[in-house]
Amino acid sequence: MRGLSWTLSRRHFLATAGGAAVAALAAPARAADFLEYGHSPQQLEAPLSSFDRLITPNDDFFVRSHFRPPALRAQRALSIVGDVGRTVSLTPAELRELPSVTVTAVTVCAGSGRSLYSPRVPGVQWGHGAMGQAEWRGVRLADLLAKAGVGKAAAHVALIGADLPPLPTTPAFHRSIPLNRALDPTTVVAFEMNGAPIPLAHGGPTRLVVPGWAADNWTKWLTEIRPQKDEEPGFFMQKAYRMPDTPVKPGVAVPHDQMSPVHEFPVKSVIAQPAHGRSVPAGRCGVSGVAFSGHGAIERVQLSGDDGKTWVDASLEGEPGLGRWQVFRADVELARGTAVVTARATDAKGNVQPETPSWNPSGYFWNGWHRVSVEVA
Ligand SMILES: Nc1nc2c(c(=O)[nH]1)N[C@H]1C(S)=C(S)[C@@H](COP(=O)(O)O)O[C@H]1N2
Ligand SMILES: [Mo]
Image (cartoon, rainbow, N blue to C red; front, side, top):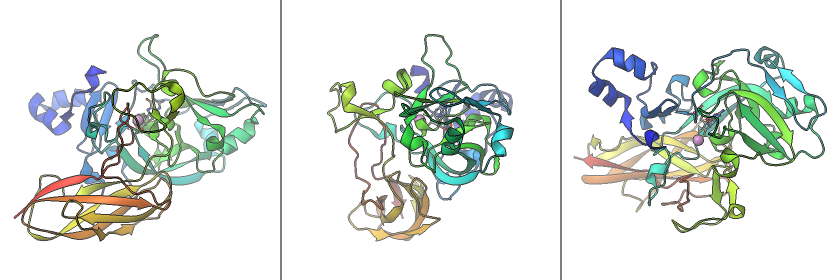
């Protein structure tokens, strides 16, 4: 994992590598000023300035892939196999002929914000930007499973993508979700992202969308959907993407039976404006950002210009809903000197964003207050 731990902004890379020819080799053309944590496979973090709008454009969307993507095959078939009445195989063109739905949902990597944990946790040292919100079009997974007929013994559904590990000894990214979540009407096998065919980096031609759940459950480059009795075996289900059921002390080994797979992401807000380190005039300062929760719609976002001593309520834009973000805006009063602007979201279940979340061994679900320091002149 060492190779993934370096941090270099693309702009910085262009400046230091000194030339468009090198840049063209290093990274595909992208609109956003991404933070690049890895090139092959690609790990791109979106800049905070992109979190002041309801939809993240495809070109500005973060990328997290464990291995290099498979070849782009616009007509790669998807098979439903395993504990089913009959095997079903569908091409993306056939999928498009079925009744489809659209869902707007936040994709957030379980590790987004990992770099904020102390003590440090190994893994990609994401800031807040391993997230985005898109409108996905696709077919309900429940409808596809109904076509195949799920066997009585099935309790989980494995999701397999076309990407392969670099070595035969490296575990493949094989995942499963519980059958009840697979049958949830919001769980979709998507073929469009923001009105366009899903780009290769984001799982095209077909990927799973599981609104409200961490993005490791959102399998890209789908080839196989497999109802089965047990949770999928292997590293990416049994070792990675699990959290202790109750908070633990750093360094204490947690037995497997006291860890559960990461599912619903916690309530969180991230500030887009003002940017950290900016100079602003004293008085009113406009603050904006996004807030979301995997447990329910956002109920309230409060903003503070004095590091949490006093709070004002922000207005919310966009449709409320579980697993989808709304944009918040309000003005806060800033006194001269260094001011800390922060935000705190509450969801419909009454969950309030904590000042500091509890530490966990893989650094998942960091949702503490996002603190932005500005110089007030
Ligand atoms: N097949 C496959 N699906 C995958 C992954 C992967 O490596 N392979 N990465 C997962 C993880 S950990 C995340 S955070 C999301 C990232 O989605 P994005 O690259 O479209 O932003 O894809 C998920 N789906
Ligand atoms: Mo992730």
